[in-house]
Length: 119
Image (cartoon, rainbow, N blue to C red; front, side, top):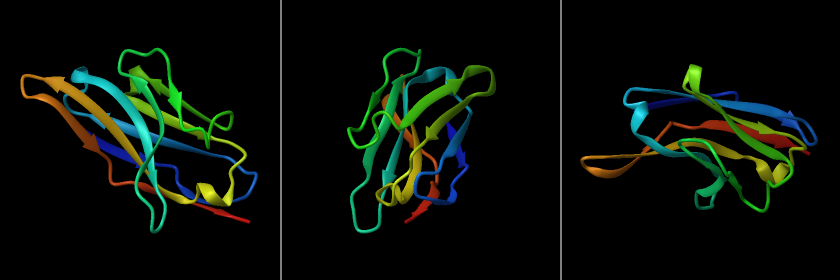
């Protein structure tokens, strides 16, 4: 599976951005998908995740009520709508999918897109 993120950039605090992640390849084996982020000097952390077949989504406490994860199956695209952005949301955001097949569970990652929130 290949993943390509887009939509990052510089935004003022309180603003919004929408990230996109286009998946290609063996997408029918995806069992979960989500967004992670890594701020400078910090470990990568989960932002939002959803099952591959749709259903209940989970969010980090720090983004609940502000971020929303969604998908468009027809376009093989996952989105992260980010509203009311804060400077602490500044990070590289990564798209992740988990697949399951004959070789078991495999994680795939995009290269990331930088989000910078100015105060």
